Length: 390
View 1 (cartoon, rainbow, N blue to C red):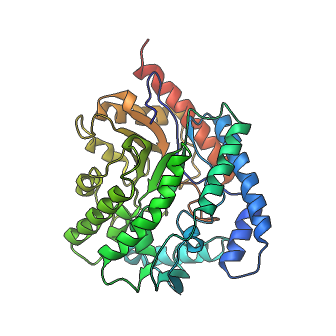
View 2 (spheres, rainbow, N blue to C red):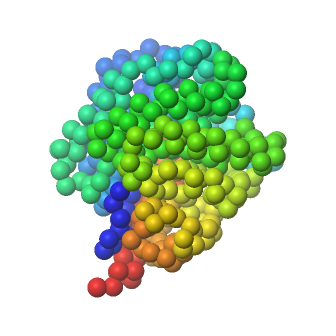
């Protein structure tokens, strides 16, 4: 995993805006309408090439495929796992229940969007969960590798994302296994194939684990904190087992409180969950420090909190607002994080979350996304001038 040796390297959290035509295809398919699978494949492959070129143009050092060939960051697994069927709807977040007028407005806005929902019509686990084939995952990796060959100077390093077993367990209700532990174990064994395929292609693996923070305000909103922490510990143990064959320096873990513009005043503090998160045998962590609820929590990373071989990708761009952060704001945030960690070489500049975690869900207009990422790169350059004095 690349360190910021003589300047702050720039990355992001994964999903990037999908072209409108591709989003429409994914949304139609999610509604059960007939779509041309070959058309989706062609549009997705073209979108990957475009995403790689655009990332390079705005100065991304550690980039990915933009998750263009998936309809969401975890729902794509519906076609890759056995044992799924039926449907259910995820409950709302605890913070939305506290503000009924906000919830009314939020639901109305969501109803007007062309998107793939992360709450409604979700599948359930009704049989044994197994990974069916690595063909689709290998296809994604091959298409990304082709895009990189067409843009040979694009990135210093490339990554690809895959979801945590915990977010899959939370969103795909278990109606088959006799315990959460056994369900997670089955999901971990299934996802291991995706993790290892990504690593085998030479890409960094980013595991997206919003469950390690988000589920406190979702599944465990009415439970004691200890119950949630026990869930998080089991998820981390499952992740560790699933990546045991992958060198830890090839894995980074993304944790967040959900990529929705809601009040977030029921979020669990980072300090409460960080000891559990740090048990993950990974080489780096990707965390949000730009949004108004968690911007102060970089202070949790005093010198010595990270292991000597670990890095921190600091979210210094908010993925939910169309404000374009000034480069000096970005630079100030990076300098504060580097000061807390005590070593700027272990800090990368990133975003709070993905910009389009489910097709059509993104709140930031596509042209603004690229302007925000360009500002991220410029802010990292300015911070580097002050942090790395030659």
